[in-house]
Image (cartoon, rainbow, N blue to C red; front, side, top):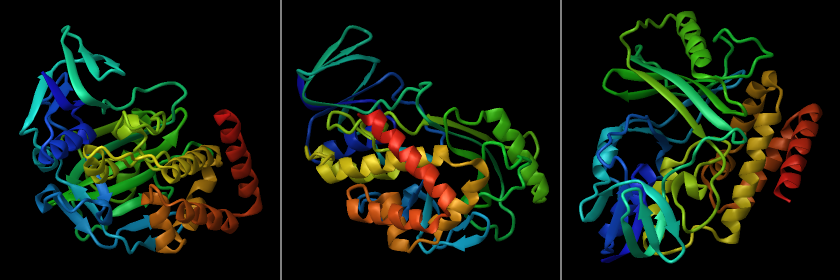
Length: 359
C-alpha cells in the first residue's frame, strides 16, 4: 500500500513532520529503528520562533530577559524558553501515523524506501529526517551538563564566557549555559559552541566542575548528567530532507529544533523550504561558522560582546531569520564594523576560505 508521505527518522524533526502531516489529513508512514525511544536531551528556543499549534504544556520554563556574558553582562530583551522534553515528545504524537520499527537502508528517487528487514515501502513523497552522522571534516558542538537544585534567583545564562572554568586564554574556549528546567531544577552545561575538532566531553566536565566550585555551587556524583555531541554542519538544503539532514540546524549556534517545528506545517503541505533567500542565508551562516572557528580563543568573549550589543532586530535576524537575507547581512556587516582591524582581517580570510571551498 502506498502512502502520501514517508518520514525516515522519528527524532524531534521527523516526529514533528509526521505529526503535522497526519493532522493535515495525509496518510503517513514513519520509519525508525527505535520509535519508542524516549528523548533525554534538553532543548531550548526563543519564544517567538515557535508555531502557534504547539501546546503550552511542552514548555518547562520561560525567562523574558535571559542574560549573556562576554566580558560584560548583557540582559537580553527576547524571551527564552526551555522545553519539557517528555511533554514535547508526547505532543508530537504519532497517532494517525503508520510506524514501522525498522532501519532505512536506501531511499530511492522513485518514492521507495528499503529497510533493513527487506521491506519496500512506497509513497508519493519521501522525506529523510534521520539527522547527520559525525565526520572528521564536520564541525561539532559538544557539551557536558549537570542537573542541580537551582540556586536562589539564579538567572538564565544563555551564554557566559567568563574565565572561571580553569581554562587558559590560549586554550579552545567554552561557555556556561545555565537554564531552568522547571520546579527547583537547573541545568548547568559547559559548552563548546563549535570546534573542528570540538572539545572532548571529559575536558568539558573538568571545566564545569571547576566553574561550579568557583561559584560556590554544590554538586556530587548523584546529579543527573547530560552529554551533547552533534555536527553543526553537513546538512544540505533540499526538499527531500528535513531537520539536521535538511540543513535546518543553524551552523553558527547549533539550534535547530524550533526551526523544524516552525517548518513542519509548510513541508507537510508540500511547500519548499529553500527559496533563493533561504539558500543565501544558509551560505551566510556557514560563513559565520567559519568565522567562529577562525577567531583566536581569547577574542571570543569580546566578539560576543559586540554581537549582543547589536540592535535586537539584527540579533533576531541572524539567529532566527532563515529567509531574511537583508537582516542577516546587516547583522554581520554591523558586527564586522564594530570589531577591531586584526579581527576583521581574520574574518575576511575565513570567509574567503569558505568561498574557495564552495567552488
